[in-house]
Length: 91
Image (cartoon, rainbow, N blue to C red; front, side, top):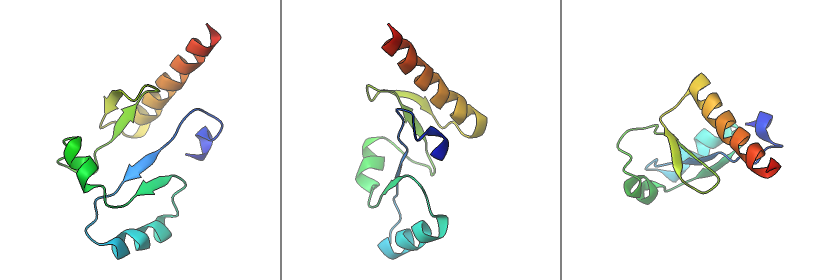
């Protein structure tokens, strides 16, 4: 998500792998540029996640605005929220 490094935006992955070693190995291989949380099973349970991956896009107030968007739809969802923030700050 380097393209949003100047924006009010954060990407966080919540990982539910059974083995921490597997998680760490995957992080090394993927070289992700965003935060990853290991041991996220309680979070997944609380949010009703029953399939992986499940993606949530939250607004600045922490409300879920989009669910299970990917590709262009994910880009559009993020841009929609960034545009809303710009509009609010201009008022």
